[in-house]
Structures are given as C-alpha cells and as structure tokens.
Length: 190
Length: 271
Image (cartoon, rainbow over all chains, first blue to last red):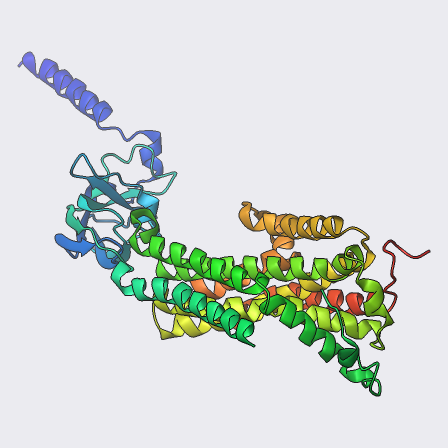
C-alpha cells in the first residue's frame, strides 16, 4: 500500500516526460491544421520515354494529399539527373518552365500539373518532380515529396536535315553566278 | 556614278519633262549598280553567306538545337542588316562620290531638278534590298517549320526591311549631300548605323531598355521580327514596334528631299 504514492509519482513524471517530448515546436504550432509534405504522394503519367534531340514531349504529375488537413501552398519543381557520365544537362535548355506554384490541396484531394521537356543532347536522363511547401511553411517541413523518376532515353537527331537544305544551299549561289556571268557575256557581245 | 549623255538628259532634243528626270537618273544609276560588278558581287557573296549559315544550322550540332523559328529569324535578321547596310553605303556615296569624282557639276547642269536627282539616286540605292530579300526567300523556305511561318517571316521581313532600308538610304543621302569627302560620308553614315544596330546585341531591360527598343528604329524592327517569327505573336499585338521604323522612313526621306533642293557643287553646310 505504501508503494501507491511512488507509482503515482512515477506515472506523473513519465507523463510529463512524454508530454515534453511530444510538445509541438512554435513554428510547427503556427502550421497546425496543415498537412506536411510527408502526407503527399507525387505520381507521374509516364515511366519511360524515348525521344530524339529537339523533340518535345509532355507528361503530367499528380500531387495527392493523403493527410487529414489541407496543405499549405506548394511549389512543384521539374528536375533532371544525367544517368551517364557523358551527358551534360543545363536544365534551362531542357524545359521552358521548371517551377509551378500549386494552390493548397484539400485533404484527400489532388492537383495535376503539365510539364514540357525538350531533350537537347543524347543520353540517359532521369526526370522527376519534387514538391515542397512555399515559405514560411518550408522551415521544418521535413523530407520533401518526390515523384518516381521517368527514364528518358534520348537519341541524336538533326532537326534540319542537311540533305534537305543542300539543294538550296548549292543551287542559289550557283544560279546567281550563272545568271550574272550570262549577263556579262551578253553585254560584251552587244 | 551618274554621267548623263546629252540624249539621256535631253539637251539636244527638246528637254525632257522635269517629271521624268528622276527616271533618267534612276535608270542610269541602276545600270551602274547592276551592270557593273558592284550589285551582282554583293548579291553573290550574300547568297554564299546564307548558304553557309543554312548548312551550319542544318548540320552543326549546337546550332541544330536552335528552334527552326529562331533559325528563320536569324536568316532574316542577317538579310535585314546587310540590306540596310548596302543601301546606306550606296546612298552615302551618291552625291559625295560624284563630288569627289568631279562629275557632280555635269549632273547639276542637266535640266533635271535636284530633288529628282536625289530621288533617282535613292531608288538605285534601295534597289539592292528587294533583290537580297528575294535571294533569302529560298533559304527561309528550306528552314521553315511550316507554311504559316514561311509567309509570316517573308512578309514581316520585307515590310521591316523596306522601311529600314528607305530610312537609312535617306540618311546616307542627307550626309552625302553635305559631305565634301566620300570617305567622311561613308564613315559617318556607317557609324550611325552601327550605333543604332549595337543595342540589338545588348541585354537591355527595364523601362529604359524598353524605351530604347521602341525608339530606335533598328531595335524596334528587329524586335518586331523576333516577336512575329519566334514568339508567333500577331501583327496587331506588336504593331507599336513598327512606329519607329515608319517614322524614321518618313522623316529621313522628307528631310533628304528637303535638303536635296539645296544641293550644291561644293559640300559643307550653307550659311
């Protein structure tokens, strides 16, 4: 019977410790009621793409909020990673718009974005979408949500076929040279 | 160089009607440009330049990444630049060249009004532009991405190029009218052209940059071509960019004819 106060005191201390450990930090308290990026899943409409340099292709990404509350405003970003040593990627060349703002997504809701990619060099590239909350919710948001990568295989292709332009490239100066030479000859004969 | 024969100028037979004098001068100047080596060689070298550029655009790996619209725009911008420069240099030589070769006196003695002499010389100077544009058409056709782009590019290029060529050829004529030395006339005219062309290669931004683009006829014309050909914008959306080239053409041509009425044997500014 004398142990009861001890057990009660121990339980009280334990509950205080647990309470202290699970107390929400001030920044997080400000966002209480908003789903974190951990509640988001990002999917893409394609898993593999084969393209030629200079081609354009589009795909969509869908951000789904699996949390119980709405998300803050989000930023979706299109990223590229070269899968071989020989491909240099300047992302600005590969897509005209790589960042999109996404309005808050309600609990259980989703938002879809459309992306355009124009491969400019041959090689194997991973294309992915990463989603992060807009500031001020960015601080302490935890791991960012990312989509599965799209495996993009690019083969080299010349947009303007040299064989196609060759007749014009040769014929125009040739025609002009003949025409002007003919004019000179005709003038001398007169 | 205009050297009118008596029959040309109508001194032996009844004098030519003053309204026809510009045609006589223009015909003689056109013969000088196109039957001598000057005009044909310029056109031939221009076609070789476009051939090189077109082949590089088609085969070079880096340039090949350029969108076809960008390539067509590049071809037309080069055509425009060369057309305007040639028209300017021909007109800058028109009066001061005659003065330096001592043939201006005989020209002034003909019964052709001085403004008509200026008109004839101006027409001959700008005659290179439509020929250069005609030469550029097959290249635009070869590089086009579609029939719509071809028509837009050719029409926009011809309109902008015609306005700028007339404007700069008139400017060259004004400078040439005052200049005693042909070198001075050519250098001064070409300097003005380069000074106005330079902003097209500079990264201008902000309200001041936008002002420069719209006020400078060269940058305005160049931007108009870029907007219509590359960005596929309608003429009505970008029509304000044509204001500067139109004003430049009207004002310089008017000034050139006004000043041509005071054309004198000696150069310099009359006091």
